[in-house]
Length: 279
Image (cartoon, rainbow, N blue to C red; front, side, top):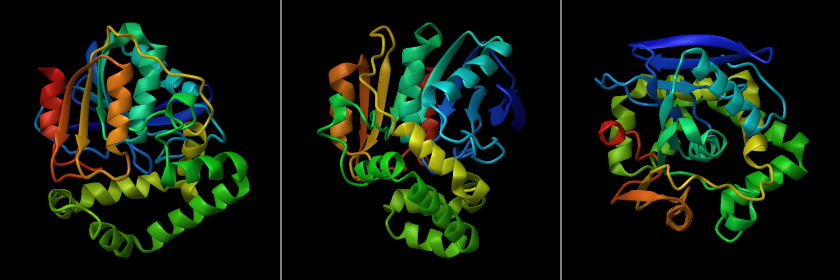
């Protein structure tokens, strides 16, 4: 059963969802770019999974030009209020970047980190050679053309809100069979998650992009934190070169490179990922 809750940190409203009762050891899930807190399958598990909407997503209050650190500090404060002493983190896509930074900020509470189709730090000297294509465009858009970024994401949100089914049909054509099959079988969950992502006229996505694109000199994670990598062999959104980056810098204990799956591999593989996290 999912419990939807709202808290207020630093005067801002923050929404999150929780499966099962609070425990001192939880799974903390960070959703991807253009995702939202409930964008994960509902499975029969005793684990307590907690997932937050970033500012401007769903019922989380819009916060202009916020920082990743500010959002993660609010998340940490909620966890401490509920006496959470350790977290096992899962980060999908852009959520993987948030998870990496959380591990750097709060190493004493991070028990493990699972990076699923994960993004690397976008604007960092260490990743300059591997961040390309759409991600370079988003960095340029978010930092150099703020007014156009707001217009761009507002227009995107309007298109999705007015023509969700048409947009979905177009996106489905680009998915691999296993991902398409999951989407077709979980229509309501996908629709709720996507429409929450583009709430508030797309402001949440716009300011999330801004936060993700801020310059970072480096990002380091304690070698005491085991890292588990999940990646689709056909992922064109976060390429396999990102996996090489994680392997070269973190304490990667296992790599799961799944054949014939793309960027949304975590949806059909969710049960396996959760079982791997809690084993």
